[in-house]
Amino acid sequence: MNCSNKYKILIVEDDTNIRSFIATMLEAAGYQALLADSCSSGLLMFSSYNPDLTILDLGLPDRDGLELLSEVRQKSASPIIILSARSDELDKVYALDHGANDYITKPFGSAELMARVRSALRNSLPRAEEGVLSGKFELDDLLIDYDARRFFMRGEEIKLTQTEYNIIALLSEHLGKVMTYSSIIKAVWGANDIGGTKKLQVNMANIRRKLGIKPGDNKYIVNELGVGYRMQSAE
Image (tube, rainbow, N blue to C red; front, side, top):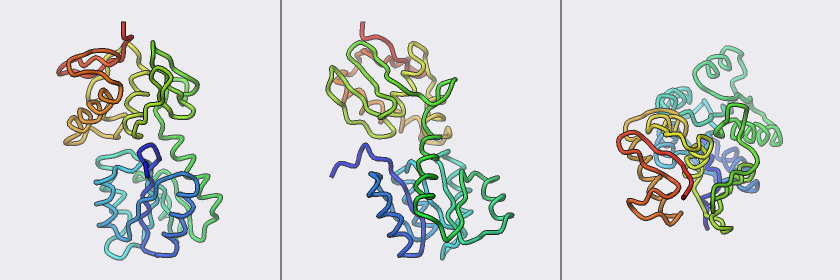
C-alpha cells in the first residue's frame, strides 16, 4: 500500500480502545495513523516518521505527555492536539502556552475531533503573504494544484511525500528567489535543528530524481552552493 502522499498522524494514547477508535476514524478519512502507547514510544515514533500532526494524551504510563510536547517543540513546529481527561483551565492554558495547537477534553465527539484535525493541518500548510496557498501554479511543464496538494509534470502526476510537496510549494511561492537552507528547514520542519541540512539535501535529491533532473542540471531547481535553492523556468 502506498501511503507516501497521505498525512501521517501520530496518536500517543495508552488506552487501547481510544487509540484504536481514533486510528479507525483517521484511516477512514484517508490519513495514515501511527500508534504509540507511552511518552518514550511516542518520541521514538515522532523522530522516526516526522508526522504531520500528533494527537497527544497527557496521562501516559511512563511520563507526563507535557514532557513529550516540550521535547517535540524544541525541534519541530508540527501541530499537536492535546486529547486529555484533564479539564482544569490551568492545564489547558499551560499546554497551549507551551506549544500545543489545540486542546480537547475527554469524552470527545468524533466529528469535533476530525474538524480539529482538519483545521490544524490546514493551518500548518505553507502560507503566502495573503493567506494559505490556493489555486494552481504553472511553470513550463510543471503544474502544482495547491488545493489538492498534487504535483504534475507534462500532465502526468508525480507522487511526492508530504515533505517533498511542502518544499516544492515553498519554492514555487518564492519563484525566482533564493531560499536559504535555514529558511527552508524552518518553514518545512519548524526549526533549524541539527541534521536539518542533511534532511533537506536528501529530500531535494529525491525531488530532482522524480522530476527527471540529472545531477548537475539546474532545470527548474537551482542549487546555489553554500546558500540554498531557487526555483526558476526550465529555459
